Length: 329
Image 1: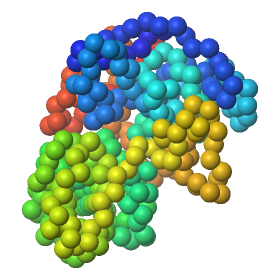
Image 2 (image 1 turned 180 degrees about the vertical axis):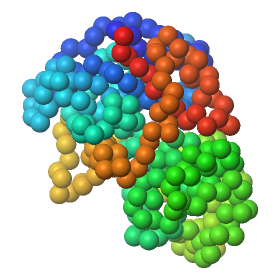
Image 3 (image 1 turned 90 degrees about the vertical axis):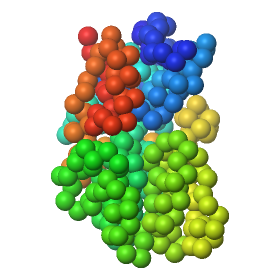
Image 4 (image 1 turned 120 degrees about the vertical axis):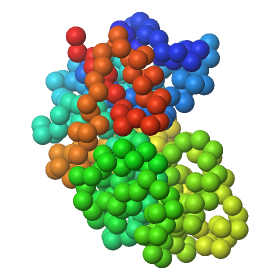
């Protein structure tokens, strides 16, 4: 089977063996996987001689179920999330805790964005917002776009910012989201400040970090979602007694070998929103048309064009925020 990897800062295809089924896992025939530009372009840039597998969000059809996978059957449509189990590959062997059945009303392409959706949902949960509170979403790449839409669906008062004006236009259909491409302009509209500022950018932007504190209300929160250095001016943090939080991927369970590798779920009554349940929640939001990801699904490439897709996503001015990789021959 074919798998996309990064090596020496370039994209390559390798061939490896189809995985064998094992207990508590599903063998999934991949139909689509979504490129997450922020994470994956960073991995490509850092890659050396060793091959690094890319991807973490995909959709496919269950081909075989291992023992102890009650609730799943061969032929099920499933969304899958989480490296190293999910990658850009023809077949995936995925723990049942990282899979969610896809409702009929959700398209294959929409379902392939489930991992990205889970990350957006978890970021909002980390902010611990209450109904009607005000948030700023800074950086409208694919994660920021989803966070803004989900926050709007939850009836938060949403202010979205990106210096690339055309990216704010992608949210124009959401009439309740206030969009800005100028950081000074947004300051004039926040009144007493935002309850939470979600930073969905990348890099070491100390100016943005300082600005985020100016946007937050007294005792407000800054949530780091993107790949950004948590360097904030102490005086500004002290003046507002601001809280800085980091959202770790898609939710509780991420990087826990018991939850992921051993596929042992957390008790529902103690940990309501695991990464797997956040994945399922994304699918519900799409099914009920509370969010619309169709504007982000216009670029679909085959494996033969995947290198070109990564190059195009490196353009930070582009309104193309992701490419879907099709594995259908």
